[in-house]
Amino acid sequence: MLPALSLEPGVVLPGNNFFDELGWDSLNNRRIMRKLSPLHEIYYYKFPSYLDDILAPLRPTSRRQLALPDDKTKLKIFPIGTEYFQKTFFPSTIKDWNRQDFSNIRSIECKATFKEALAKKLRPVKSSPCYGLMDHNYDHTRMRHITMLRLNLSPLHAHKANHNFVGITADCSVCSVPKDTNHFLLTCTSFRLSRLPCSGK
Image (tube, rainbow, N blue to C red; front, side):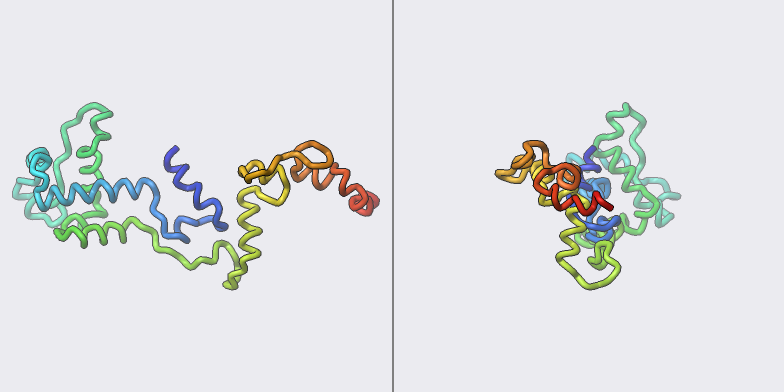
């Protein structure tokens, strides 16, 4: 549910790949970055000490591990516990820490450089803001129309009421029924004469 909620703000922006267009992180990638940063501090700075005491038995000790560049920074996996325990900070974060594609990143000792490299690895590169338009002319009117289509929004009362516009009721002021697309185009008595040429054809 939370990953779905993290997508909602991007729905107002036209285009299919708004994560790439905006350079936004997915919720899962944000979790990984927030967890690996404190683990990096514990691993290299041994701070805070009470957490380093938990991590100490998991550090690589064998000659084989210490001899291999990719393995010397890997941590041992916690003994298998309950499913709930495996989702807690240390077991879940160590699993991400040991990822093969993080082998070069986890060997970085500088905290700031580590965070920068991790963000570069996980964060999508922001693309040019064309938002689905085929040309590069930034037309605010076209953007407005595309955005309204994506949100199912229009000047009709029913659409505005669905988006909680202040002082707006859904009903048509003439017919006293919801003023939605079907009512506006097909049944509203205010536009009966305007529809006559179309009905004749």
